[in-house]
Image (cartoon, rainbow, N blue to C red):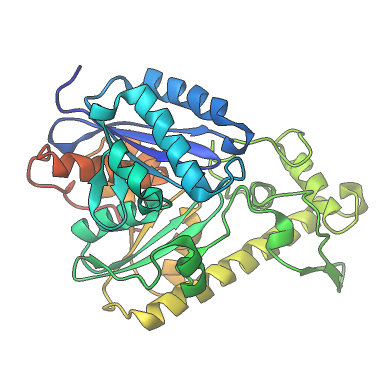
Length: 361
């Protein structure tokens, strides 16, 4: 077993993300897998098997999570305990550390005393690493389901909310993403055919259909079945989107469905811009402070940065990583961050900690 290897795990409710860091803090591999945890812990076990088969063994495993939120568990604390038990059974308690939003890392036994200390802290792991390497910035992670907005000043994370409930109120957590968000949560009404049409409160289509029609959906981002269980082609996405306003796709030209998708994308972008401006109004940043972007939906963050005349730094360029791995590491920022933080705690990072010049847009 490589003596310096650390794997960082982000146990989500819909995806499992894992990043392996080796000697000197260099990223050696990253993987994202579908893990619909609401169906049962068997989904996690399967995803863990696949991830370990790809990444290999490691002497240390560092874990963060949001999966405790799924309705498989009666309470979030029950969810944390269940996920900790699964990881301890797989990795061994001596090789395992859990990220605590207040004090670094805890052992499995320490988590048992206060499970909520490690609940939904993946945003802070990513923000902490961004702060260490870009001391004045706004970190924005646009994922498949949610968006995190984290202001950073003087190398410190300067958030108002510390848990999901408070972060929703502060605007630092926006429950919208580019894959799994139902279209009915993107707008109440839409313009179509010269009139304003109410959107059906039904899960006929998701954001992945919208961005498939606009041509912006990244390859491999949509890892779950569609709303109707159908294929993931452009015509199938148009068919699902048409259902949202009580129509068949054949009732209008293909261009009209693309126009509707672009309108919905714009509505989602405006929602994110409002949240971003609210966060920045409470924690102003220097004019030259960049947006550090992450997540499969970071193309939305890039557009926001341009609208606000701010430069962009991709999270994957902050760490030592081969160019072909950068996009995946940026997709899996919390997992990469948790591995980096655990390696730093163990003294496994060799200076310089960063990757050199970052890639900007």
